[in-house]
Image (tube, rainbow, N blue to C red):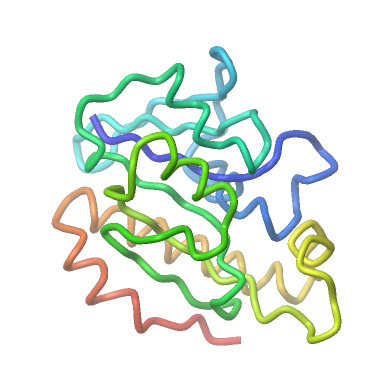
Length: 182
């Protein structure tokens, strides 16, 4: 089974903030959510493979706590989808492993299971020069940005399908240089 974890913050106040693109991504894949422990989940099939989608309800900075409840033997079968302030809106980056890059939700997951999980990073930058990082990531997208994000989420889902059906390397080659036209 493949486990796809989308990072975000629970509650309607955060629903359309930049920090919630991981949740938005998962909502594109499923509208049927069930609650278990401290997370919501949905089970879907992608290319005939069982895929479990997970939204941690622990708030971003404690995202790794879901692994107290979800036991998985092969961490290489985990794909984490989240926002990236260092990538411009309209771009995605796929990686096999790596550091947290300053993202507290990813730091929490690394603390729980280590660095060896696939990442789909969705660009939300650049942050305006004089704006506070926390304020920026917790602010809503503008209508114009939502139009770009709509396309980016669709491309990100295509990338997930390639990761699952072919390989992460193929997805990296195809989508890491891809940019949604503005």
